[in-house]
Image (cartoon, rainbow over all chains, first blue to last red; front, top):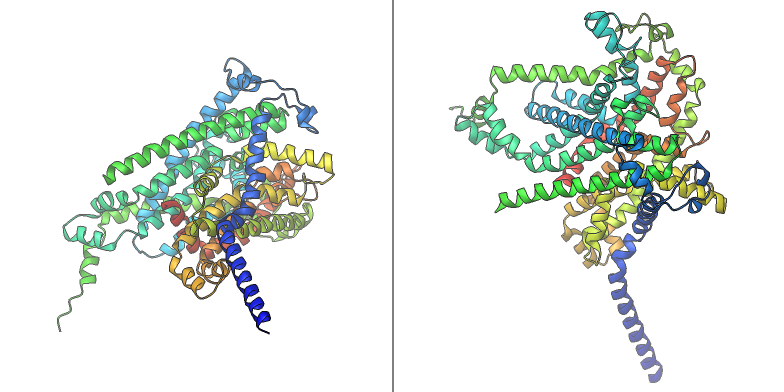
Length: 326
Length: 292
């Protein structure tokens, strides 16, 4: 009887130790177990494609090798040479597209930021219809890109579009000949308008949310000290969104620079030269002229540029913040 | 009894001067016009008879008809595209949110080796252009299809996988912010009360972060619903989504603008309504993520 009990107790104690032991191991492994699905997917959708993209950029990968890309001949840095040689058509076109994208991004981000900030500041105080306007202003952001941009494409039609109807027929500007908006140099401005229309509500959302965190007492104190509304905006409102602006501008920059959807729906597979954004340019180099090697090299160069800009931007803004804290 | 109301006094002190009100009114009016113009065009054109959209633009339709709303379903197989979009965007949303809940919980609540590397990787993949992943994924899918016979290229499953390239990092990143804002004491108390870590996650953290999870899901769905790049390369006739299918209304000879506008409106209403209903959660989440 007694031996059985001792044996039972011993077994119980052993089991307890084992449970506690695996418990500790499980606790240490737990974060990794929780991460496992995400890690596997990250590997599958980000890491492998990226490594493959880099490998592809060193090969002469044309449509003949799509079925088995590993058979494509290794060409070293030829694709990169082709992409950056501005004396040859491919490099010249890439540089042109890059500069267009830079100018376009600069203008679009500046306008989005300005419209978003101004609207958020003006709508800080309550007035009649504020709730309705707020909802309306978010509509461009919520609309699916293709539905919104296709409507703009309709408005920019040369013969039966609203834009030309207003400019030429109703205001009598720009002569009798209707303007081309989706071809030639004007396409840059058409794309810019659509991009700003689609993008500014995001700035509006972020700045508006940031302004909600500004204590009301600050304004009241300033008002009692005799500061007018413009002074309050300059001294309290704008400085208090400074930290948010750093992230906002970076995000706007990355989105605009990488935007593919807007030009693709507005112009189709090949954009006019004046509005040939880099994403479309790489898409066309890869899927229209079927040169995946060069397209990959361009993608890698684009990635390096974005990493460089982001790192530089973060370095500058965080250093500024640290100085301000000190 | 003397009526001294400090609120009234500060309000009069804060009451903006006329110049401010005028500038505000002008600015907001112009902006409203700019924002509403395409919406007006979309709605009115969708109700116009074909002659109105084929000729010069008309502000006021010559007549109203709901014919375009009937024709859109026959001119192109819109219902099929709608269903494809629904499946692909829905599945991508569910997958990324579920997987992100676990990952974000690990990052938010545990210290472990490689945590910083993981978060930096997730953050940086968000800034990469889709075109970067498109080419390799396209080739991977084609090659997998050739060697194993598993048709990823052109399938809904393949498209869902590519949509995770943007929705997963975004979901993880936003949910980390939301989980961080749930007080740690709550799930520690749950653990003391006998909940395992997963019990604490599902009984305490997830319920407390429901608004955040909803916001992330809405945003992921919206992004997938509007996606064009992957959809235009990775789909075929049977798996085509709305993003590509809407192009079917322009034929060689004719562009059915009234039908395009009607279809655009139909495919927009679900997401716009969802967004406007849930935007409060989304705004809170975006700033929580952005400020950190």
